[in-house]
Image (cartoon, rainbow, N blue to C red; front, side, top):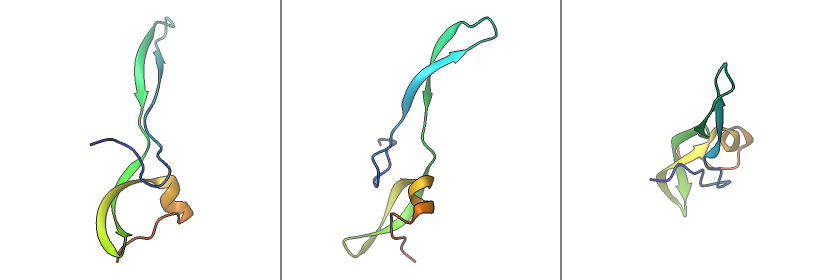
Length: 63
């Protein structure tokens, strides 16, 4: 399953870790995704949503 927010399509970003000697190794910055129950087309479904969209109220949670 793709680690992507269904609201804003935010996915992993890629960069480098730097050690004390400044040696670079590849790393991955994952978004803070939460699996929540959402109302999609009137029916509740579990989807991944980033915490930024949850706080902003961009998605409607199913109760």
